[in-house]
Image: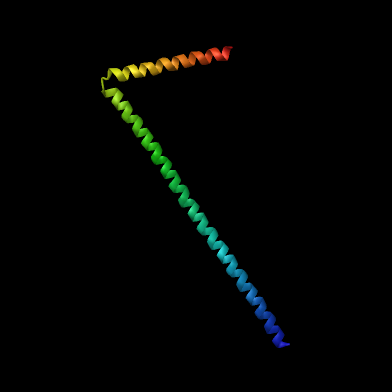
Length: 98
């Protein structure tokens, strides 16, 4: 009877060790995945911020060029764009009323 009891105890102990190791492995992988997600999100937001910064910097350069240069062709291009915009607005208003 003592031999059977030792065998059952060993079997139960083995199952407990296997389950514990499995849970530990799952928890470890879950934590690694969470850390990876945090790093990935941080890198993505940093890249987006860099792209936005570069776009804003380019706009500022264009505005500085417009403000400081006395460039007649550039002024004509701007006026043409304004005329196109006015024409588009008039066409949109006509389409809405029709």
